[in-house]
Length: 126
Image (cartoon, rainbow, N blue to C red):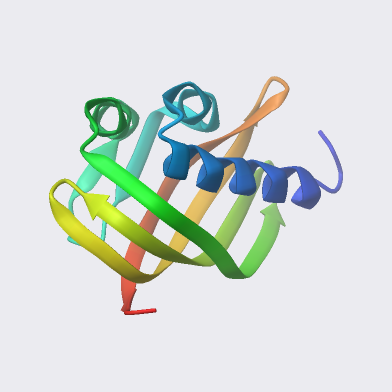
């Protein structure tokens, strides 16, 4: 394992933001682990398959996703990221325009880091 994976994780985080603003389902499929569990701001737990289906259907249309205040912590074989993301667009018919604080857990599988879990809370308007 890379003794200093932070740069690789930041690159994967940037790719994730790119994927959600371009509806790049193939890239999302690569970035998210098949058994991902993710708690949304409404307290509902989602899965990778649900997330990909929402992007494929056009139910999620984000035109802006900008990261700030990112913290990265490598803990054993996992990396935890906490980041504020400013989002604009629509999510399942609801207008999204604000700041959100994400927590994501990354784990290496073979040569690739994938998100295995996470959560998000709304911080308010940007």
